[in-house]
Every structure is written in structure tokens, then in C-alpha cells.
Amino acid sequence: MLEYFHRLAASVVGLILVIALVWSWTKKAFRKPLAPWITAAFLLLGVQINLGRLTVTELLKAEIVAMHLGTAVIIFALLLIATRHAYHLESGNRVGSRIQASKGFLRVTWLAIVVLFVQIMLGGSVSANYAGLACPDFPTCNSLWFPGFDGRVGIQFIHRLGAIVATLALLFFMFRWKDVLPSKPSTKGGQSFPVYWSRFPCFIGVLLVIQWLLGVGMILLGGTLTSMRIPPPLSVTHLGVGLTLISLVICAYVEFRPDSKKLP
Ligand code: HEM
Image 1: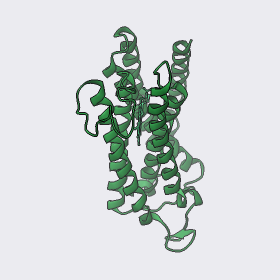
Image 2: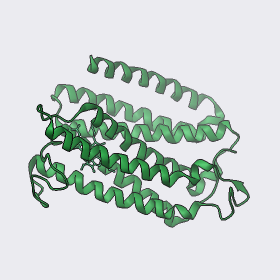
Image 3: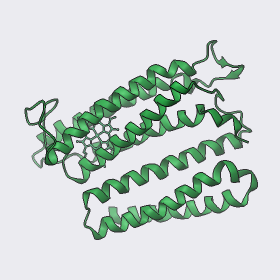
């Protein structure tokens, strides 16, 4: 049943993407800001369908499942960027801060995106290899602080190390947020600075705490269940929060990157 709905959802996504693709190429105003992103997403959808087919025929081979997740994240990111551009087009470019951030800030933002993407892929690998409960304790792993990198324990341990790196990258990103904050309340460079951007690091911080609680919760709860199973609602929420975190940082990058002013 779940598999059927997954296929059904994929068909709906495909159909919407075809409509968006045709629309973005036929309407002149959309061509430059939207068509490249939507075309890239469409091409990747072909890769994704093939990976989906391989996931079934190769009986859930872990690497293929992880790649399927990674491609889904990239398609989502491309569509997110297109949506953000469409939003600016729709509102006559008045939405958003239109502030150009320093190169240093953009580098930190880019780093956070890459680190988060790798961490999501590592998470996908934990899940696909059924390594979530390879060590059912925390903060130690099978009572060891350094369990090594072998087998399922290694996969779980690398995801934990990745979580520390991702947290540091996001803390750094939050710390550098002051670079784009207005010097006077509500304005910078004479332009309005929406309140959601002012609160942005708080959203990221809260999501990060939730993500850790979910991660640790899955391990501790899963380990105590008689079935020794990761509770699916926690796993799905963990995936959703990971995706939300990377989406938010991508939105920040799109908003503050140097050529964002050039949008028609
Ligand atoms: C920024 C931090 C983190 C991100 C972005 C992240 C992301 C992810 C993602 C995307 C998955 C795949 C979920 C799925 O395919 O269902 C995953 C799986 C997992 N993560 Fe994390 N994670 C983070 C931190 C943590 C932490 C701190 C822990 C615990 C110490 C943890 C434990 C797990 C476990 C046990 C799974 C396997 C779930 C399953 O088998 O369904 N994660 N993570």
C-alpha cells in the first residue's frame, strides 16, 4: 500500500513538473529565471525514476536507496530555488530583503548546505543499511566512545560524527547571520528587512535541537522496544526536519547571493 502511494505521488510530481517545464519555456518572462532550474529538476527526475526502478529490482540495495534520497533532495532544492524566483517575479521583486551579503557569509552558507547534504546522505545510508540500532546507546556506542568505522556500527558512528560537524557548520552559519542583519531596525540599504529573516537563526537553532532530540530519541526508544525497531514516525520526522534545515539554508543562499538583484 505504502509502495503504491509512493508511486502514485511520483506520477503526480512528474506530471506537475512537465506542466511547469512547458510553462517556464513558453512564457518569456519565466524563461531566464525559472526554466534552467525546472529543466535541471526534470532531467534529474529521469535519473530518479531509474534509481527508483533499480531500488525495486536490486531489492533495496543500500547505496541505491541512499542515492535515491540524495537525488530527491537535489530535485527538491532546484524546485525550491525556482519557487523563490517565481515568488520574486510575482511580487514585482519587492519581496525579500534584496541585501547582498559578504563573500564570507555566502561561503559559510554554502559550506552549511554541503555539510547538511552529506549528513542527509549519511542518514539515508544508516536507514538503508538498517544500522539505526547498531548501537542502541547514547552518547556511547555499545559502551564505547570510539567504536571504529567497521560495518553497521561504523555507519551509525559516522552519522553521529557527521551530526557534530553539521551542528558546528550551522552554529557558524547562525553566528555569521549578523552580516545580513540591518544596522537600523527593519531597514538595511533603504530596503525593508522582513521579520522572518531577523528570526531566521532562531528557527535554525530550534530545528537543530529538535533534530538531535529525534536522533537520540530514535536510538534510545528503539533500543528499549521489545521489537528493537526504530519508531517510523520519529524516523520520518527526522528526515523531514533534515530536509527543512537544508531548505532553509538554501533559501538564505538564494536570497542573499550577489546576483539576486539581477532578477527581472
Ligand atoms: C543535523 C543533524 C542530522 C541530520 C541532518 C540528520 C539526517 C538524517 C536523515 C536524512 C536520515 C535518513 C532518514 C530516513 O531515511 O528515514 C537520518 C537517519 C538517522 N539518524 Fe540522523 N540526522 C542528524 C542527526 C542525528 C543524530 C544526532 C542522531 C543520533 C545520535 C541521528 C540518528 C539517526 C538514526 C538512528 C537514523 C536511522 C533512522 C532509520 O533507520 O529509519 N541523527 N538522519
